[in-house]
Image 1 (cartoon, helix red, strand yellow):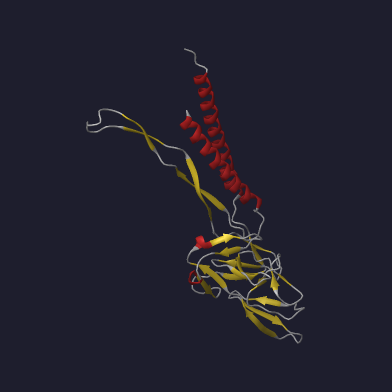
Image 2: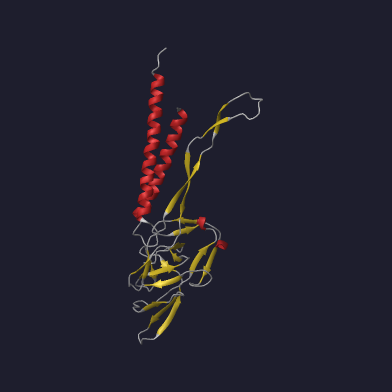
Length: 257
């Protein structure tokens, strides 16, 4: 019965963590560029609880009993989200693979798929949290801004002539496990510099930049709700295991000679 209590408790913990992950996915369904997570489960170690037959006999059957389940990791899925047209000139979406690099006020590097940018008074293209898009510096008060699919940024001057203000670069990673969520829809890369690959949009497998579009979260509402119901049912079954084992333990303690 103690084995059952332990296995049921590990199942409760694992399903609770799954519900937390699914809840975070659903909460961010309207966050541009958000990437959902999925829990991976593993069976805990099994142990011998009884050996049947004579020890020297061939073909003995060993009784193995598992000790429950655990969540090994919450894997982030970087699948492409749907692109929606907004018509806002500072909205940028990546059609394909790659990340924008932005700089925090202190100069630290972060990466994002959220292209809901704005132009600050100094002519910097910034995120909603004030992080500056790398490599682009515009004249303060610029109004007519054109971003080509290859990331080239052109700005019309006072005479109407277009001048090039830089090119948006995209970044890919040979070790995606090194990306870690850092809040504000940004990612911190904990790997080595050699695992970061800089590419021009549309070249060598990198995605293209789409101006006037935003990438939606890659969260499927129907799929997440189905997973949430599954986790709820599994949590209920594990709770029943714990309750049944507790009742049996109480009965055993109440036995009289």
